[in-house]
Image (cartoon, rainbow, N blue to C red; front, top):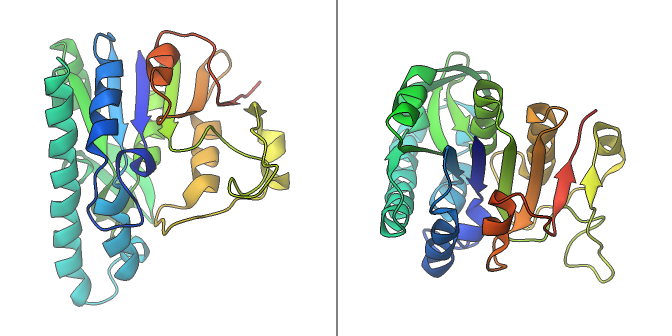
Length: 255
């Protein structure tokens, strides 16, 4: 079993509302084609973060005006999801969408319940379940954001994959802001490294940004599981990572 997270930063332009990088998306789907026992998660990117940030949806139900925003974000992320499904089908894959709002509930922003029966049912049929960053019901806040990283974390516990691959728009985790001169790639991160690290956000992110991503990866990893962040802008890198080859990126390791 392999989990792949297509980050919103690589399949969309997160700085511009509803801008998809279709050429990159199609290439990445082509690199996943042929892989067996795979589950795909994709971020919401500019189809979710911008409006969710504007209306503070990650904080939960605060006033009536947010309901219209919830509906709009729910619709927008499904539009991106349809584009991802189209690209996967064009590449010869057999995807099926599992919207988190229909199968996941949260409690105070954390994933509380996931209908895993649907997931296993589609895997048994030989299909590729596809989840994505979404808005979902929350038993404390009324609603909240279910990020793609949260979904990855839960899927790892449910499926015990041999490999989890996070596809981003950078080479991995850097020792400083990637835009700064001299920024160097960290080949590996362990739980002991987290408190000493400095994280930088280049665009609006309602799901906790890169620090939350690393925390999710540390939580989902187990000894012997390959968990890595790679650059999806580099052609062929995802295909090599799926095949288990040594690739440039940042590995997250636990003892």
